[in-house]
Amino acid sequence: MSQANEILQNARGRASSAGLPYAGVVTPAEAWSLFQSLPAVHIVDVRTSAEWQWVGVVPETDQIEWKSYPGMANNPNFITQLKTKVDPEAVVMFLCRSGVRSHDAAALAAQHGYASAMNILEGFEGDKDSEGHRGRKNGWKVANLPWVQG
Image (cartoon, rainbow, N blue to C red; front, side, top):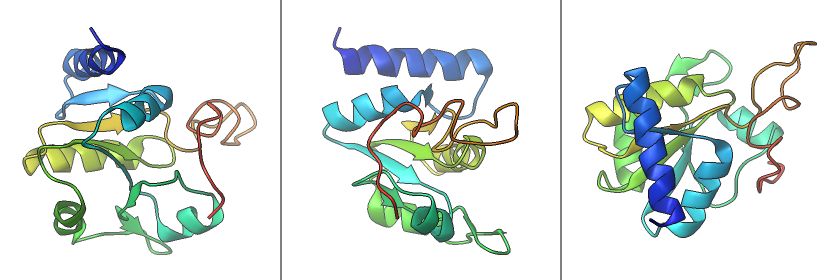
């Protein structure tokens, strides 16, 4: 079994055992591995444009706001925008700051026919540490995966 197939199998198993409404759950390192090895895979960053600009982005990902800063109103065009960027047959992994908005985006995408929608655990900045700071405990940046300042 290839590494990509093993990651996908594990991701599906995690989602199934947790009763999640989408196809899979991946770690940041697994997401990066799939992004590099599969031809029809997308990472969709659902953070706000302010986060992309000020916190950083993963190169070559699709960016579609789930909520808009500063009011954090839901993006009513999310699915329409997703359909213009990502084929519903593709593996699509959603990324946010900590894994919460991306969970919601993956669930909505699955409801709209994205059979391989997945959530990236821990998000871009990860969980808060004991001092209440993100970016130190886990997440994309802590895993030393590629990203650039916005």
